[in-house]
Image 1 (tube, rainbow, N blue to C red):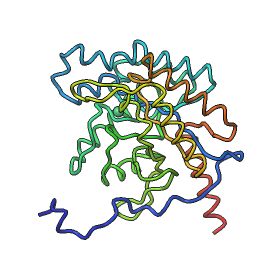
Image 2 (cartoon, protein in one colour):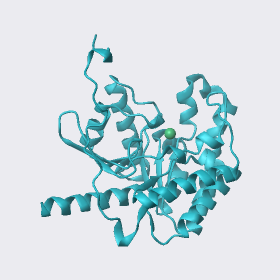
Image 3 (cartoon, protein in one colour):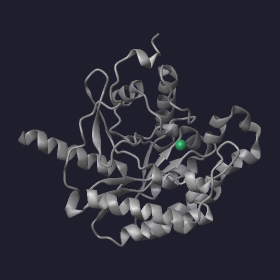
Length: 296
Ligand SMILES: [Zn+2]
């Protein structure tokens, strides 16, 4: 049976070599990538198609456009921080002016699928649709060709990595298996996109949003800020990157906003933490890689 994994020899899921050592720019010890997944209402439709007509369920996502994103853009501007927003095509089509305001704020807009459908093994056509429709929405509404991609539900499969590489993406920020960026190796042995791995402790959904589709225990501000500060402190010691997974429907709510701003202010109080977008981190990685290759 093709899907009987017990018939195959055990092998690591990731065939990429260990993440290379390279310096962060300007003597910085580590990098922080403030990043938001703008799912809007698309995630609630993806949980259950009937939710298209469940207006209160949808209103959890609707909070992003009405309050969450404007508040976050204000907080980032006050702190002169540029962030990465992984936006679904659905959110672009439903809230074009809001998405334009993200670009006008000088932030990076990156790809997060169209309908927020989870990439699944063997469903290449569905993944192609998600990627192509998302690219089309970005081009049509923002005139942007994104360089970054974050998988809906943080899932990926080998075919998707190949698809992203062939579509010209520069980086993915979805995997959980490192604290430094590395370059993927595709199934056919070719070099793939750069990975800026995610630290799942920075997924605010786990602490700050609860619903019958996604029941969680809410946590107090001090508890979450303490986790985030510890993760950052040790990542700084190790010279890694903290790639955040905030959602405006969580971190744009009052308590979430306090957590986010307290953490960003804490990070900014260190002058050796490079706060950068995914595009900037990927470009730095690629430049270091070119330099290493030319001196080999
Ligand atoms: Zn998402």
